[in-house]
Length: 414
Image 1: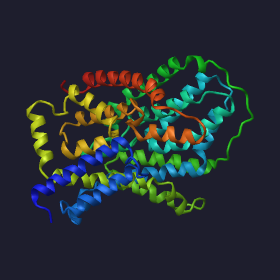
Image 2 (image 1 turned 30 degrees about the vertical axis):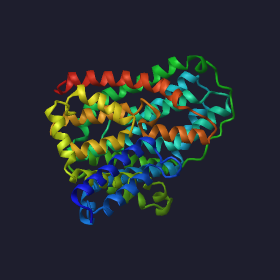
Image 3 (image 1 turned 90 degrees about the vertical axis):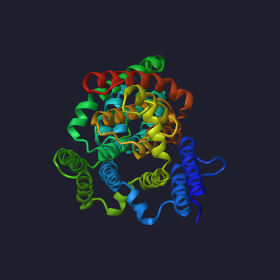
């Protein structure tokens, strides 16, 4: 067993190394990714004796993980029914102008991301859209960048749009309709911003009329799509009603498993277990660091010097910096492990700004990385600089409008 000072030093070093790993996305020279880094760190802090098995279980926010699981199972319904592939193929093969295709892509991905996990939406759509547009002689890059940016922007509107909103909603006990009323309007404006920025920066390539091509539309099971649509409506209703959110999400997932069309194994295969494990491990690492007392000391110093992120003047630059270094989901997990405001308006601001900040750089959100990696596998390469060319103005404009909206509608101090 390590002495207290040595144990604190070791846990702090593991904690710091974990978030450096989140920023880098890997360990140089090895194939270990963010999930592997978080798992290694969680095991390491357990071996120091800083956190014991009962405390490990207590540190994991199981309601948040249950909601995420339920949303992934719900999205699996649409994946297995062929809905995402069908929609992406229809967009790619449309005879409309590229401007119209860009708008359709943004509206479609933004709307779906508001009610389903945005990571799943981008994972399914990106390769089909990339291949379809490339086959027609179209530069797919602006459409794919718009897909990622719109999925982030659209997901900002609701409590179930992305993992960080789910976590913030659970920790703060936020209500679905109140969240939508506060975060929905700036999210819609952010979608408009995505269209205008991408349209302007790629105006030359977007003016090219796509070559007509024989549509290669995959089969879709519309009965299963309808079943998924009903499940979405039921989920939203359960989130509005005074039913525990985790219980409602699990109930939807359980109902979807009762199927004559899809085996349970097929649905479970679509769940992003790596992402769920990443969150669970980050909860453990954060709890171990919190128990050293250094987090409380740091929070006291921050509060004494007026840097507590309950003000827009602090929260906006903090979320922008943190989201684009360690990623917006790890950043929110980290912040809430140290600071949980009692004012719901501060939580609305945290959710909205951390999500919109994810568009700034390629590393800002998992959705960005998913689109780039899936597009590369389909033959379309989007570089860091090319993404930033669109992402930076999209983020700065949408965050500025969001801050103005929050200032006018919520009593959040500067």
